[in-house]
Length: 241
Image 1 (cartoon, one colour):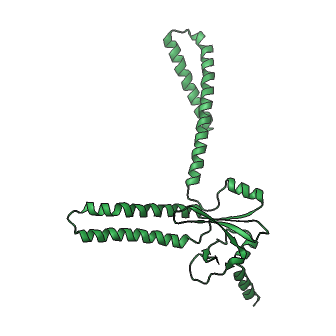
Image 2 (cartoon, one colour; image 1 turned 180 degrees about the vertical axis):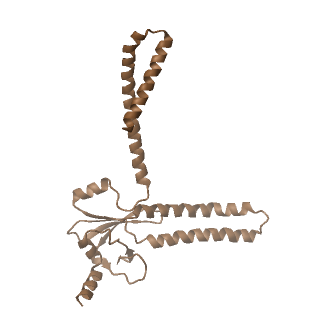
Image 3 (cartoon, rainbow, N blue to C red; image 1 turned 135 degrees about the vertical axis):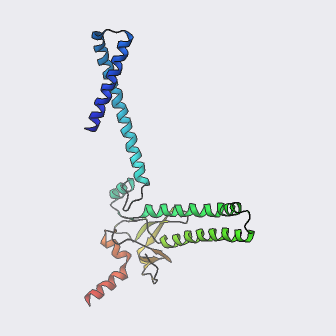
């Protein structure tokens, strides 16, 4: 209904504009009708083309905004379609994109603090003692670097993508590096161990590294049981008691 009303409004305005233009140019009213119909048809065609182009631009813009939006859950795209064709079981971290954006923001803030912090500190207060200025600049740099390192330590076990082919003894994971780039790894189920640590958000340990899988979003119970074999065995033993 909204598009039809806009279409009729633009059509009526175009007709009035052409009629007034032809009357001012000296054309007779009964000769203006066919000319107006022809021009009206051309106007409708041009308007339809413009409307279609605008809709395509809006669709592409909304798709881009959807990609940049912070969301919870897996993204729908070519990767999911390819994995479905391969009959592979794929787990996506529910807040993978959010963690990557926060990490990029933390890295950019740390770089700005290291590069511009001392300059701003020494230029803002010329009467302040040089030692005090150096202490303030060092504190800003230390605080920014500490928060960035703490964030990396906290989210480093997070698995952003896990792909497993049923029947295989290995599975592929994607982790994030210091610079928020994806690092592919291949892990064997035989190397999985129960982590003997109180570190939060850790599911299993393999080859000296910690990994975390959100059990609520890992819908394949067979895969989840193989990722935590000893935990599942202990829980079943307690239940039998």
